[in-house]
Image (cartoon, rainbow, N blue to C red; front, top):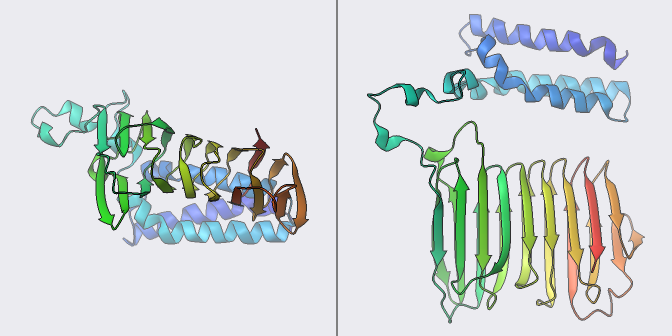
Length: 312
């Protein structure tokens, strides 16, 4: 059975099931809420161009549509695009003079900071955010500074101390998240004296990180379809970095003096590992990996991505 022969049949069956469940009162579904399923087109298109057998494509199509039907009730609980915006692009709140304006979204820039503490030798930063532009570079005399511009609402900052380690958590306040975001630009600066562990959990994003001024021990980036550009320095004797991303473009620059190992757990990728030699299944090393004074370990877990590792 050819995939193209059953593609539209499965689509029509799934949509028909959703309408039928709506009639039975199992979930709410209509033509307006159907709009929220537009990302499904990209998923199905991606399945269609995968270089795999038609039988596997059909099975994947069936699984995706089944999960769509099962979990659509969660999707339909969210306000649809048409409910949230009128055709001029304004929210319904903008047209209601009686609405309590104290709950309106805050589009003002936000500036946060954590004071420097000379007794703190280690910093741990966790960023939990939606899609946007994230820029981490430059030195601050504070322990950390955070600047946000855009119409996404505010972030919350919390800190805890454990011995000589300070944990910093930056996360978006859920009450301020819009369904349609035009801009979310974040700039972060760190102090260069402590060693740092970074953990970023974000949506589809453009990430620029120049880490040459910092002592970076570990970095973990969990992202959606993203453009990630990172420049690693040599101030830490051991740096461990892990990428978990969807269809992304990842570029990492490492010092030539540092020995580096790449572990790639990816499929359907375009890769360019400058100055690396393959040592095993998914393992690549620089010639000076065993002799380099500093070591860098990169683990890349992506799908349908472009990965470029260069040395400077």
